[in-house]
Image (cartoon, rainbow, N blue to C red; front, side, top):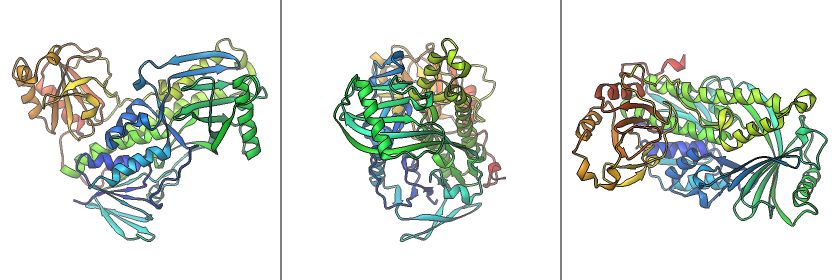
Length: 533
């Protein structure tokens, strides 16, 4: 079977290649560049808890030592603290990391992975597909023809793959612009992220006075100034003036000593590809969507694209294309990103509308800060990871379904479980291996060796039901799960989203749910798929 061709060697393309390799699927990554990531301290990313865990699983690198978890988040308006959140558990705070550090960790993991071939200086200029596979042509020193089973365009906003497939990319340009500076200095709130709106030293307009400060390791900070609408040139003199003015304002006097490491202008666009699948060709990451206003992070969604697509491509690679399963990638991921873009577009006029009546509405400032906090911290409609509650893969009419603390379609909680070999692991450690996960909630099992309870009670019946499922599944046991009663059985997708929770061992319902998760009963279908029409 031919490998999966991945066009683009950014974080999303590299993560997808590693995720496929963990499921024994080979991949060829076509890198247009020379294979080295440019070190730009002003290009940083914020990863939420789930995407941090995903990258750590793929690379084996604890990212906390490479980036900075925020100790707290503060939102200030003029001189008043509007909102302050302290993170008691480091796992719940976002991770701020330089993008070249993140990409470097992924590249090192790819270099050590025998199932992934990274080809540099290879620019795609042609794609042809037929029922049995895809042929890609590249030009450059490594220019040649590549044969693949599927092809995924992870090649950024100007995606060649998207253009070759004639996929429209509508949306809005420059919905926000920020001047950016990364510098080493000491601020009055070490380790804490800050959103400062309408600081007292900048009173000309609300849009000219929003500043974000986010810490990095070694006393390094990234500062973002929201720029007023328009295309005014950001000169070095203007940016240095902003740096000195801001540092002096925060320090209550003269600016502290600082070392300027990098500067830039970050422009946020909002765009969404019309289609994410054309036959055996898929889009992911910035090739499929652009977002990032109000503190949201586009890379977060790109990594979730890779996680969602990897297990579906792996199943098709090993067992043959199942069109309903492959089509679900677009339905699930495009639906989530579209909802996030709609939420941002609805909120933007409210937050960026300037003065007028809104400026005099009691409590409006506090409400605005709450909305911005949601975006920056990964909460609410602006920032929370989406749930696949309306997925075409969701099972219907399960008589034994019971509610738990996680809604169907949402990401499961990372509880401690007992694996089949008797070891204690976190549930997230078992994700991304291509198997469905069946989790039995059985209080008290944690204090006994597995051999004492694996043949007792309902375990033999559940083990038999798991063995009979239409796809490989791993049986895990947890002492507890939020909102779950004893003997609840959870079915979890390979990407960590809950399929259903059943009250007890119900083999027929468990089988039906697993079959739905795989796209329904397997059929003889045309490889081109309904998404190609």
